[in-house]
Length: 462
Image 1 (cartoon, rainbow, N blue to C red):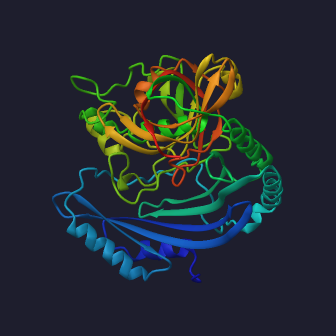
Image 2: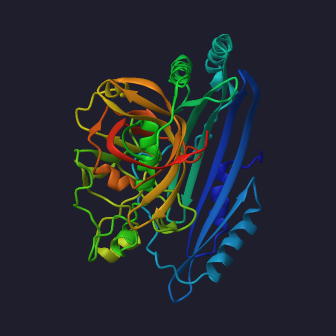
Image 3: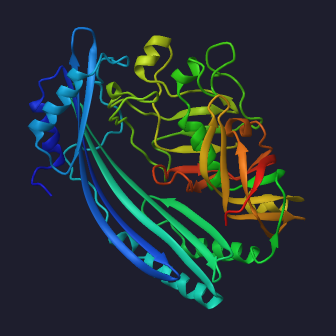
């Protein structure tokens, strides 16, 4: 690692800049991980990395242009700044150009502090507990596979307007797969975490053991619409897609599911039959996220000109009604609407909901209980119709009990349409999105009941 600290790199780059404006951010990351297979640890690792990003802003007379260049490690600062300025000069005027942020957002960390770090020690209690789970699985004749990782990322953001912002972001996840020795049965449990102190290995292993027990009886069912209980992980994967596409500009211009027929967006429309709230909050307990934006490239949902913009708590859907969409400052100016930044966490909750998933199963006469969804792909942006497969356990519920495992299905559903058909939501809990957890781990969702989830075809996937 270079003797230059992240702060020194940022200051050196800002000092070298000859552009009309400059944003520099340095991301210091450490990561530790464990991987296991067939009831034995197979690998462990620890990694360290640095990314340096310079965004230059150049006014060519026709308008402000932006150019971004990123490097890993500790690059030649003069070369990096010159490259970003050349990229800005080569670019055309940016349509999202607005003055750079100069007001410090609340909640920014201490600029001068060293970056936070993680190490393999984060698994000091987790690894022995995992060993005990291996022994118990071996005694039962089951196999455990999986992966655990913990990352600590510190971001330093400096701007030519004087901002000096810092944020420490811990992120962790555990994925535990259970399989029968002939690999005919496979189940999954997973959880996100900030520090592994709240991860219960016996709890995860117990969930896997119970699902493997359910899988001993196999039931084949045809495609069709089934009353279905979606666990929090599956709900989070669907709601993340709904969140991901909440771009105000796309809605205003008629390109996404939040566009109103005849023009404009659907803010004010009721999307959910139940009084559900979908929200983000950088201070949400256990799901804490950066209180300001860090953007390397402009898109419909973020702008390089908005680096350092505050990301306060926001309700996207409140009481079932669409309340906000993600809107850059430039688009906000054009539409005389408030700028709203995306936040790196997501919570769905129903007021006064207390039912657990087990209690919802007990209240089900006949239906399906999913484990996870995967291979999710978009079919139609106008309706946000998605397709994907079920994975690691679809279970038949009869008379309030799980009576066996069902074949996998391909499904077709829109999460926005689904919101309008949810008839029951349980207690919100922290969960791990199975499909999207390589970039998003901070989610809390309830289990939900959908009376007519569309299993469009039987899948041979196992």
